[in-house]
Length: 538
Image 1 (cartoon, rainbow, N blue to C red):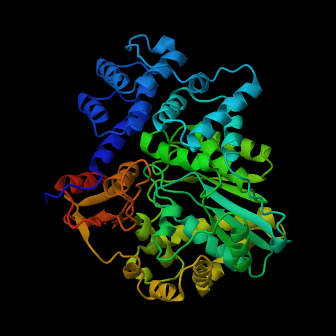
Image 2 (image 1 turned 90 degrees about the vertical axis):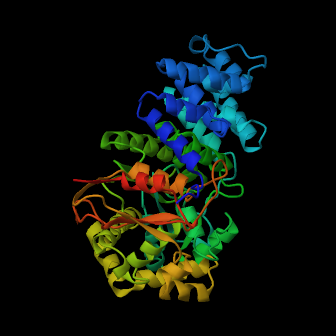
Image 3 (image 1 turned 60 degrees about the vertical axis):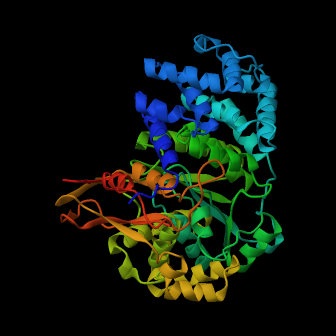
């Protein structure tokens, strides 16, 4: 198997960045990967900014010197902002960027000046008057230094105001309806955002609700519902404004994305965070999520704050702190909200990758053959969606208990009405009836998943003890290309991995731990070994 895997160099880089996120020192090999000519300047800028703010080894000091020489404008600006950290770097011949210097330093004493600088900084970035690698240096700085609550508040509103605000709560066609939405912080194999909208479509037939359901691109090692829905032939996201209102009027739910003039600052920063290893900054998480929610406000927002091995927030304590910050910023912006903390001890299902996750979500909703999937995983996903639905309806219409809402919606799954509601949602978003019929009859074929899939066999007999979700997600998104975006890699909707077992299951030697779905005819032996190492069998 000699063919090179697409995007493998990016996968190497992501592994190095993840090591930085764990506060571990870089090896000489990792420093060489980060400094090579094929590593993107945005990555190098973020790494340089991060290393300058932490105790560095000799290897890291040498890496800083090399990166500083390659990025004179970044170096000049970092030296201007943090002279105490940059004395060992060579003095560039270019001038620092004055506004970026102020944004990096973040030591304003005047709130009006802070707000003006942040807004101008984002406006320059959105309109491509500011190089992306200077913005990446700012992301790296925030990752290491954090951000004050005052700065976080102003950054959130500056991001929201980088485009238009679309407030549908007073729209005449939706009169009398409560707008509800659930939004996650991200997790591996997270498909609630594919399933919950169909429950809301069904509910909207006899309950006065609607949902401007907001979805995003893939981020880091996690998938994005924007990318997953894009794997469905013909699926079209409505434009913000009248078109979204019309879709909500037709089926109760409009799947909303940040295109056009809806929060363009977050659209660009989101993708840049994904390739620079700066996703896990609490402040950047809060600003990204809160700015989107305020740009498309709802009558009630449920934040699904994920934590653990399959999420960006590694512990429950981290998740609680981040949730509190989001609740504060969003509520202060005029959107009532609540939070639910969700643990991620293993993937939320058996599929990782856009089209594969759509296929599993279809089975969860009763479309296609459920026998293709692990019944336990389907049940787990269904119950989680029911929990979210019950919490949303309790907030929007407190006339019944959470349990009562859940019991009613569970019946919709059992009767097949959720699957029918998903078909209604697809039709309202431009999917042709013939495609909907094909998805019902042959989801794998319709989604282009009937091609190459390579089994990865277990090298030993034993119990599946753990799945390295971060590494597995990185391999799918950056190794196979499922998470490619404007800053790194080609986007491949059909790429992914289908897991064969749940944690605690017994595995025989030679049984497939998983199957790799690749758009390439071959993958390297090294990639297969890397996937196998994600499954801990003992």
